[in-house]
Amino acid sequence: MSAQAISAQEIPNDNRLTVSYRLLLGLYTIIPLCLSLQLFDGWFWHGFLQQNLPSSPKQFLLFQVIFGTPHIVASSILLASNTEYLKLYKLKIVLMTAAIIAVFGIGSLFIPYKVLYVTVAAWTVYHVLKQQLGVGRSLYRLPDWAFYLLLWLSVTAGLFVYIGIFLKNSLEPQQVEWIKLIAGSLCGGLVACALLCERYQTSTSGRYFLWANVLLVLSSFYLFVQQYYFFAILVPRLVHDATAYIFYVVHDYNKHRRQPRNFIYRSAALIHLPIFVVLPLASFALTFVLQSYGDEAVNALTRYLFDIEINKAVTLGVLGYLALMHYYTEAFTWKQGSPYRRFIGFSR
Image (cartoon, rainbow, N blue to C red; front, side, top):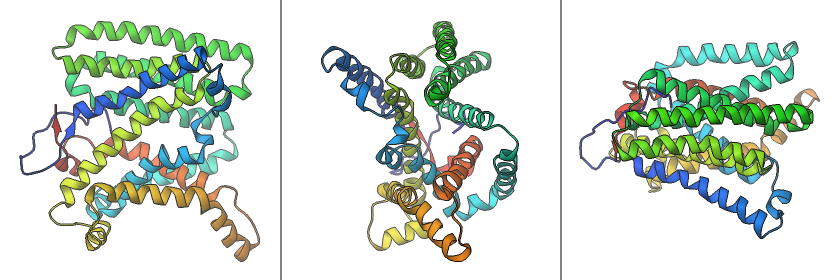
């Protein structure tokens, strides 16, 4: 979802669902929860969590099945299962697919790994924070220059935190210290920018959303410095993924509640499966299958047919492609005036 996509939109009161700003704001309670766990771990548990949690949530298969990948799969299902959406965006999808193959397929033969990694990291952080800042944009109503200053300070600080966590084993201690210093300075600039943006706030909800998004970055930086890497990634990941699912479920409920319009919801109607659980259930189930059995299934097939194995064909190839495509398509599919937005309304 892009920053330009989210603005309050009235929809008829005919039992349609709306996206509740209060519910979205409630997701940010993960911030004080993780900070409390970090403090209690230092005060009472002698660093047990710090020593035993993985350095990244991605090291937990269960985490990958719950966070990150499922909402990417859900986004792909939503786009691919509605033929009118697929036809409308077909050319963009084809061109982006060609670009991904060129850059990450052919380009990987001569582009250094770290360059590709930082590129994807920057795109990931930008996608996550642009969605969250965009959701609240209609509430804090900032001028364009202030909004984009807030956005880019957040993204740049978040990128340095991301690099500091995921590339820490390949960095020199001095490089890690420089990353902390740069990220900390950017966080200081972010706070100063937020204080400047206060002058434009006319509503309590706008002020809450503004500072919730600032704290999203600040808390991740603090947890990174304290070496609670799991929590540093969990905070933005949970808020982002849960926010996306709220939009997806509201969209699908409003679109399919009266008459199922694609094969997934027609099949669900036959077994009386509630609309609310169809997309989450399908995306979580497909994620589990792909993460747990996808690579081995492809290897079994390629061994049988060609006597070769393809390393991580599904977990890196297929899911990597879906992630990059997700970052790309979400930038325009939720914009004001898109067919997706016909089924989205907001309430405060």
